Each structure stands twice: as C-alpha cells, then as structure tokens.
Length: 126
Image (tube, rainbow, N blue to C red; front, side, top):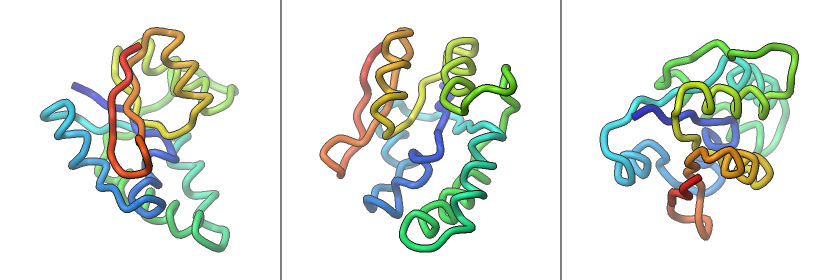
C-alpha cells in the first residue's frame, strides 16, 4: 500500500505531536510512504521562514527523506492538483490535514488519512 503525504501531513508531528508514520502503519499495516518533488519544494520554501510553521516544515523535510519522492504526472498546476492527479492515477491513499484537498480527494473516490481531534489519524473512504 502506498500513502502519499502532502506538506501539511509531513508537518503534523511538530504541529500536533503525532508520529504520522507509526499512526499510518497502525491504520493500514505495512506501507510505502510517498511524496512529490513539489511537496518537498513547498516545504523548503516554508522552512526558510520563521516561527512554528518554519520549524514544522524543517521537520517535514527530514521526514520527506523517509519517503519515495516521485515526479508529478502533471506540470504547471497547483500542488493540490498534482496530488489529486497522482493519487487518482496510482491508486494510492493520501495523508493530508488540508480540508479542501481532503474534500476534493473524497469527491474522486480517493481514500484519505487525516488528523482527527488533533490527536489521532483516521481513514475516510472515498
């Protein structure tokens, strides 16, 4: 099972103190963590700032090193579109805490892992 993690999914450990890799494994069993090159670039940009989000992005970058980094199947579109297209074409689940992206993925029948009540991960079936 492949699970694509977006930028805010990779930032959850700092923002909410949840170990996303352990939690995902508890939900789906053994899995391959995947992210996109554009997600890594987004985290790099955020990590250059200051404050809590920059610190979370720095940790997110280190977590992204544990993922298989894939090239997006589409170019010159917003990262959320790339994530949606990648998940749709590969059949992977997506771990995101972004409500709008979550709704888009569910509309396309893509399973989503999200943070529930700021403390535990849960699967929404698309």
